[in-house]
Length: 174
Length: 433
Ligand code: HEM
Ligand code: FES
Image (cartoon, protein in one colour):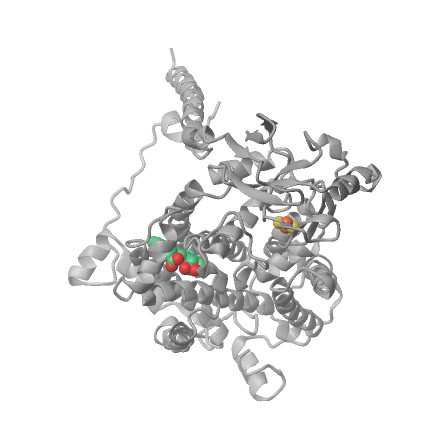
């Protein structure tokens, strides 16, 4: 056989090796990178703190408390008759993120909200703003007495966390 | 497949030079080292013999000043790191300990804090210099782009650093800024949780921010080296915007430029020392001396002064996603300027119309900085909107339009002629320009 032929033979073998090495390398890099990325997600101990119980018996009508849940404030409000009525009568067409009040509560007097503005995460102030609910001082978002966004840059309503009543006057968050 | 492999395909014999020892202009020990590791000759060629335009003004001293700031930030940061504890329960206390107990801790921390501010003062002047004299144009587009990357990294580093003392502004600044990512459609919240390592800014967040603060600071140093290598290929621009042609147009870097730069550094450091010694917290915010509280947002949160124009742009738009896009684009358009300004003339000295718009842009920058520090209500929102509109108009419409239609002034043929014209009063510039 001529020398040339021999050379191109060698080349094919080298090309084959290149392809195989690249393929194995790509899988290896993928497998190595995922742990490097995923380690940044909340770890098991953070996830384990996921639920707490809160006693509601001391919160009088019109009062509100803030508890810390998963590092975030949660507002628990015992709403007045007036606030409930205001929240229920709102025409859904007026809302940026339409949702009826009865979809946001389990018992109409108890409003439970994650106290984090859906704009950029500040804690809204209770009893302020144009809609009888909360006002976020950071960039001026107004929420109503159901925690729904009414005015300002926030895109969605204040989030309702997952919770359930465990007894008449106690809830479990998470 | 790849048929280019000449080593394999022909048996021609050629000499190879894997051993390149030699060629040093130095003798003795220096020469011996330089023959093997050419650091001395690089230094000689690039810093001693290097020719620069002879008409550089003090605005060209900012580069060296920026380098000094970066080095001082790294040195003070390194020693602060020997006392600082990156955990949510200890961070605030450890910073107070640095301030009260650590020997000269107060000085080191105030120096680090204020060097960060002065770093930004210098970089803004540096960017203005580029804008005014068209230093972003052919052949310096890449320098401009590297500069914008450095600017982004500086902002990230300063933001991360500001989180470390774990005061109220640290905490809420970190919350608001990381939440910018929640505007990303679909995966926004996943990204934010990933950044935090928690369901809110917390201990894990602080720990990783500390590591990234270090890492990015050294990353800046790395990119700055590219900036400087590129500079030594394309050469410095100058107030006339005309490339030097012969030795009548240039001086050698040392001792002429170096002595001028050293004097500028001295003035800059003097200003720095005055602020650091007599008003160390003037550029900061008092709320950051209140420990972080995840339940209460301060009534009026503001970022550090150097972020205010961009913060104003963010707040001027009443939609979350669009606000974030506008804020990020405001810096991106700055990076695109070399391709938006099509004028062949570099220096604004010869561009009477463009010059006005550049000054207006500087004014706009300060107006946005002012409203960014005010509450987002009433008249301030309106001003911020006008300011934002001008910002984008300047880059996207005014730059191409003016560059295509403007009648530029007659230009001299060389830098030494430019200097003569200046003496004869044929070119009017401010002394510093
Ligand atoms: C690009 C350069 C850098 C910038 C712009 C920068 C900026 C900042 C800022 C704004 C702060 C907050 C100051 C305060 O309010 O207390 C800070 C804190 C800190 N930085 Fe840096 N920094 C830089 C480089 C470094 C480096 C290189 C290190 C370490 C090697 C470092 C270590 C620290 C430490 C330990 C703190 C916390 C102590 C304190 O709050 O004073 N920094 N940095
Ligand atoms: S964080 Fe509430 S309005 Fe921006």
